[in-house]
Length: 283
Length: 283
Image 1 (cartoon, each protein chain N blue to C red):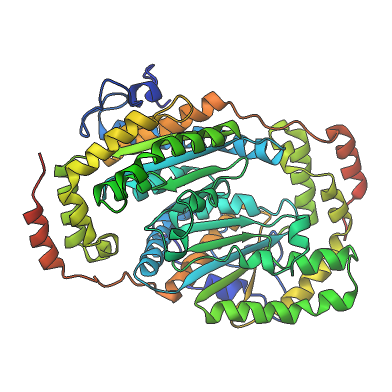
Image 2 (image 1 turned 60 degrees about the horizontal axis):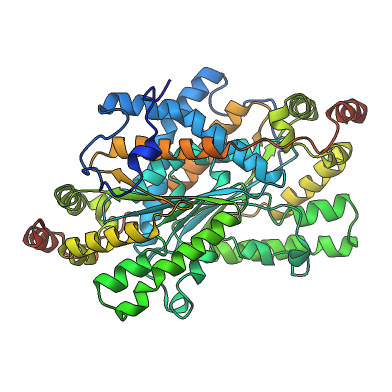
């Protein structure tokens, strides 16, 4: 069975005062690729089972949902994580949203407006590929609005996330942590492979040039918005196979702690079975 | 490699004047479960690759998308098909919508209103689990509106779907065809398994009692709405493993005929590679 390690992945990755593990390190779980891949494949059934129970709970009138945030520098593997980890569960229960640069229409609203449109329904697993944290990161690093403006967003976001968790949404905020050396390799690979050109944007280089500013902005985000209700986890992401294993287990542990329940029957199964026999087979 | 059979799945399943294959029959492709499962697993990569190209095309400014409709009697396997077939591709590119009984708010709009809200964006694979065809089926069988009302919907729907295909959406309409005997088994299994109770609704028995009325309503839908632009396919669905293989290959063949293209670079890769080296690694 996958994950014999007794250490909780959530505990190991939760961002606290101790700083973050190195992007190339293995703070918990399997350290070797073949083992991690085998365990991830085995974990698929467990994750799918828990997700199905959450979905069923929602159909039965439950209000709970799960919301995964994926943040990270370009090439950190947000799309790959969605494919390899969320790809393990039934797409019926997954609601994926990629937040790009706000459109002109979105920009006329409060920055949380478009986020609210995409919240998961009861029973769903929502996935935010980037999120309202971009509304602190980008304005700060690129000096697009006065500092007072983005600074007040920490508290606003904590308030907003508290509102979500109060309403039954469990939030898992993941920072996919890659090193600048690994990013260099991945950007090169994108530029050298025509089938990957669509993933490349010349603006990625501007963001890379401001690497340290982004890291500083992220550090402040973690310090100010990693709350009990909505904690941040740092996932060492230089190794894709390890990143996938970690995110899968963050979700499994979170769902296990939610302990979703298949709903009781809103009917009497015995009576229905008898009625079913009575309906007969048309022909 | 999967599918050595030279017969096109789309040709074999397309609903025409010849009537539909038996729900338990094997009109095309593998007839044995182990072979079908092996081939489906092998097809996953092909489907994922084609879907990624469509997604990339969309990122590059392409307007095309794919839209799969799943219709069928209760227990015909709409959810299972989504899990086993759409689960083979990256959830980033999939937009799933389950259409249930319209809410009071939805009911105050034209029946196509809520459908339009959920159309796939360029590059996406949309999945409609039930669709506007329910707005012919249910009112007709349950006599909820005058016949003149639902009868005019055939033409309206053809018009609507033509509008979608003109705008770049390729439509694949799938009828998951199960026999009443197989439905009996599956409803029994649901009632005998507490973890499946959430899938059961006592109203399913009313629909089963009207089996022949629904079949007749479906037959008219196929006759009137299987157009060149948006054809209907009948998938024999008594065997789940066969159903999954068929839907996977309907999607693969459709995507192959669309021949999605990775976009050209909107930049000069050589120049970008040089710039990338220049950015250096921050320290």
